[in-house]
Amino acid sequence: MEPPTNLISEAYDVLDANDQSSYTQPAANLYPHQWLWDSCFIAIGLRHRDPERAQIEIISLLRGQWQNGMLPNIIFSPDKRYERDRNFWRSWINPDAPSEVATTGITQPPMLAEAITRVGEMLSPSERRDWYRRVFPSLLKYHLWLYNERDPHGEGLVLQIHPWEVGMDNTPPWMTELHEHQLNLWIRAAKKTHAERAIDLFRRDTRRVPSNERFDAIEALALFDIQRRLRRKIYDIRRILDHSMFAIEDVGFNAILIRNNDRLKAIAAAIHEPLPEEFTTRMKKTEQAFEELWDPLSSNYFSRDFITHKLFKDPSIGSLLALYAGSLPKDKADAIVSQLSDKHSFNSHFPVPSVPLNSSWFKPDNYWQGPTWVNTNWLIIDGLKRYGFLEEAKRLRETTLNMVTSYGFSEYFDPNDGHALGTPAFSWTAALAVDLSLSPIRI
Ligand code: GLC
Image (cartoon, rainbow, N blue to C red; front, side, top):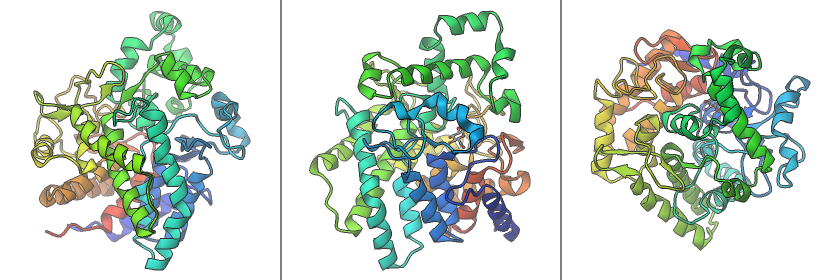
């Protein structure tokens, strides 16, 4: 079955409505700024209609790059209405932050090399080389930053310091840690006194989206507190780690890094740019170290604690993203794929749920604890194709496009009946629906 042709034009309408001229906001009102991995997915969709606009989407992400190489997860809109957001992060307290734009002090999954490559595919060979030359220095600087700052012991895996860095905000491993170790005295007091209603008054998200579809109020408060502590350490990773704050080597983030390292290597080769030898060694080490996340008892990959190396054995969509890495031995890839066809696990009516159906975390409407997201489906489809699971990839592409055709370009979807959740008119859902529609899988 091929998707109806008006799906593509309706998707472009969503992207046009969210277009801020040099970048695309993820959704009006709820997400008015530029987000890192969102813009990567958006560029992957936009390239089909207008590769030049897709290039602008990526170039505008680079405005936010810090001197040390970090790409922030958010570049704030300069609009007066968002002064509170900018002041809350106050990126300018760190001398590495850019002076022209205000940003956060944390990053998001490194999808940039993938987006650069996909946009490059739409260009002529000489345009592509120019494109690669233009963005390569910033791309390399970003990956070097990931290794220098986020793999301080040279172990191969990179660590994250805030759930927002993994882009799957309330995914189980992070929430386990949050509840066990990050609720300080005043948050516990707020919990005891049932201050939830008062907390919700200060949130933008629960004014736009039903509160049962988001973090609960206590979790939101804990995140606020973590952010405040990061700010107090002026986003300096040495000071942050000295105070043993949250540090997790997330399975999804590291899988995405492995794949994007490959993309970066191909970009460098295409323009004959040598890569630093130490960097090449470290990239190789990531692939080996990724195997330390494998738990033979449950035949699955898991995130782990940076300090104790304890695995967080709650399966979630992050475990499935291992497929996208493309570096897994075949038998382990097979084990991951079998979870996708298991009716008790990830095989819901509208797959792929963000946690398995039989998990104690599973809630069909709650953000990254059950709903289906189009970006993770896109990553899984890519992984399936590379391992030769073409039937599975084809099926998932079809169910994803059916879901979007029937229920719209929502932020996320109920994995059982497909109904729309989160904010409507969400940019990456639209962009990736375009990309999936125009990328049929032939067997
Ligand atoms: C939500 C998502 C995150 C995304 C952001 C902007 O916070 O969890 O992944 O980047 O919205 O769309």
